[in-house]
Image 1: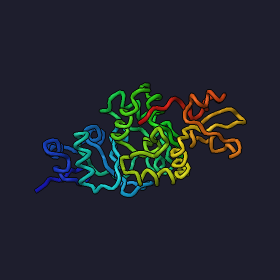
Image 2 (image 1 turned 180 degrees about the vertical axis):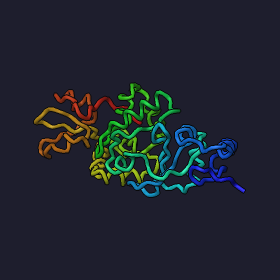
Image 3 (image 1 turned 90 degrees about the horizontal axis):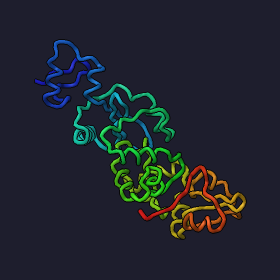
Image 4 (image 1 turned 30 degrees about the horizontal axis):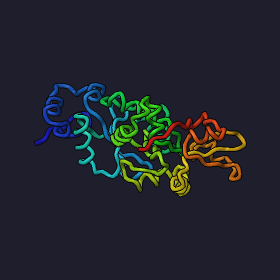
Length: 264
């Protein structure tokens, strides 16, 4: 018969093998703070995609996935983090608002185990505001590795906390949407929900337009930048890259900070 953990009613086997049996055999209840240092918690949460499950530790949110059943989610988490996973009574403070607004706010994330480069990529991607997109080259530049565009794509593909770190807002350098951990369809739905004009993005990509400038301000932006959206049609001019915009007398926007683009 499986023994029950006195803290929450989980069986000892739920705590992963030897560790679970040792905890269940304690003469007194394990202090919650101790348990939280050696195990993670999981919770279902509402959000912009169906079936969201989140794992969090005493350091913050560590893992988020959509469309998995509980055993699949737990198995994937254990394979990646080698840590027991127990159900939580409630999500950590700030998680549901972060998913609802698309802004991380003060929600802590547990990104231990990432390389310095991966962490830098995620920090850069986290700076993209809701309703806007940036190309992989922009993320690479902000991460301090402007030539590592393909490596940026790989790092974002391993993002442990998508939606919270908004890798759905990162596009190919030609302006097309590109791939996503939850699929291209989910990426398009997320961007539409944030009021990104997906049809315009596709049309600009087809025409080779990467940047939009205003002839009244002399400023050039990424097309989804809030400043670019306010440019009246009669004053909008498209450019293939920043060099072309500069040659025409435009300077880069200080908000979206466009830079050199390389294929991704």
